[in-house]
Amino acid sequence: MTLKQTLKVISPYKRHTYFFRRISVALLVVFVEKVFRHYNSLAATKSMGDNGFESNSSSKRLTLHLTFIETNFEITFTCVIFTIAFFGAIGNLAAIGKIIYDPKYHTPTFAVIGQLALADFLSVTFVSFGLMTNIVKIWSFFIFILNIAVFSSYVHVCLFSGVRYLVTVYPLQSRQHLTVTAVCLCSLTIWITSGVAGVVVYILKILNVTYVSRICIIFIDVVLLLTVCIIMICLHVKKIRTLQDSLSVTDHSQRRMNIVLTVIISIFAILQISLISAEILFTLSFHLRLDEIWNYYGYFYYCNIFLGCLNFSCNPYILFFLQFI
Image (tube, rainbow, N blue to C red; front, side, top):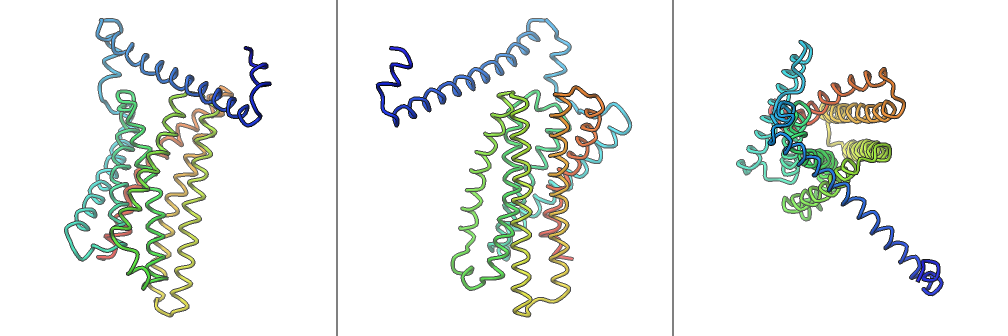
């Protein structure tokens, strides 16, 4: 029976279901084929090295080494990035250890700071090693873990703003319902959601549909930028207004909270705008084949690495260690 004859027999509802199933199967077949070709190419590369063909190039690709070590600028840039990443990793680990082992910090606010520190530690570690070395070429799954950690860090910042807002505006209700366990469950949900987002981005890269995947990644970056900034700013404004109405905040405390929010949002916003600009330039350079645009993309690439490490390194010092000063 042909397709037209089949559609005449089945009902309209079943007709739509029939089309949906055919499209779903077709997309699944395309995805499996892309994944199969991707891993076959990796296996072929490794086997060529083992058989003696192109052994030099294969050994270089399969050996972990730094990416930026050719010029004086690149060497200086590499030292700066790993210095920032080192202090960021140490700061995040110190914040996590202090919150875990000191019962004084077993509160919802410090619980979410500890969860944010965990996400930032993973993010700064994977960003520095993923972008400053060739580990992604050796282990392509590395980028998937990097995306999960970055998404989780962004959403944990929003969770921190929400917890601070609830504790400040609704203190009695928060003591009853907003517990450390509730914060940990929210954090677990964020990690699961970030895993789903990481899968989506990883599939976009594997499918290698350059124009469509780049447009989707740009859209995701724009949504992240607007969502995080709107949530943090709106909750902060409402919190400050409530404190001003209750006359329970001094000008010094209000100025300090404003500075903390401004620094965090500024670094995050500049990072996201730089990422969006780099993706747009990459898409234009790929289709228009213009070397000038590609050169500008290289500048944004350096800027993205620096801002990314700075963004995931400063949170423990601003949100946790600043209180001891």
